[in-house]
Picture 1: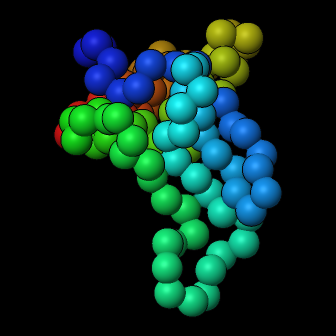
Picture 2: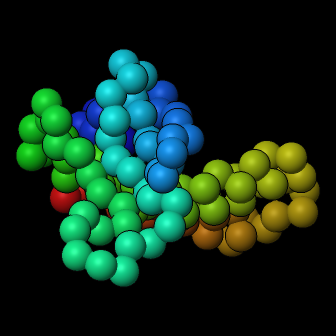
Length: 110
């Protein structure tokens, strides 16, 4: 696995009036998910803030956010394997490891 190029974690959510913000460990906003979708002109329902971040960091953050569902699924599968290793064949174990490796690569590769 390569060194992280995205904004260092941990990240957390901050519920605000009108949106859920994803905030980094320094309290700086990464992106927003609006509580309700906008149907008119203006900022889309879900926006990214570039305040103080490089283009490369923004791209890495976007990849990490986009890969989040795959990363969560891979973590759940690997947790199940760790809890009940006798129920997994070598083939199933390898499939789970491949899924995790692919999810990590999706988060890290441009």
